[in-house]
Length: 179
Image 1 (cartoon, rainbow, N blue to C red):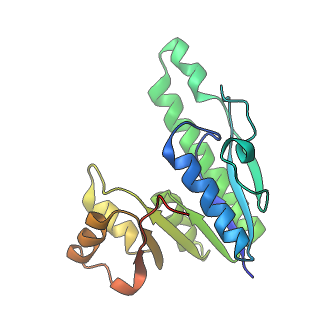
Image 2: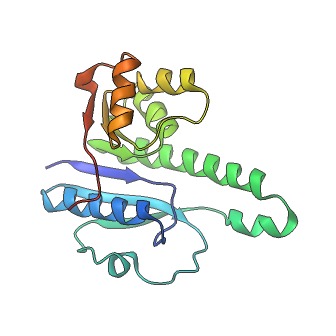
């Protein structure tokens, strides 16, 4: 029985596929007997439904929020790109603080930079990788090599891991889209 923190800088609920995948992953881990807490930013959401109801997920884990500012409002004054980056940076700092002070058995995240920073701080991290970098491959591979455990979702990305010399024992190929 492990204490798992899932840290995700996402709006829940959302119409996008990552929302259901995150909620179902937390449900599955909790149903295996682990204590799971999902942390997301507290932000404006036009969807007002409860995420557990929206995704038809059992209430077997805790969904908690990290205070945040609503970067979407910045679009009204033309500051969207800056505000989005500030919100992401704020979430990064808040998530690191939560992870360091709560001392979980493992942190699960889909954010590479967050995972690498926590790993450098001695926090056990599992990084779930969904897509190759759009640029900056050297930094991406450098950060990947700092992680001990990675879940790779698309097959072509697992093939690139092999090409990049990332040891097979560090990652698991596990496609999603199924219960």
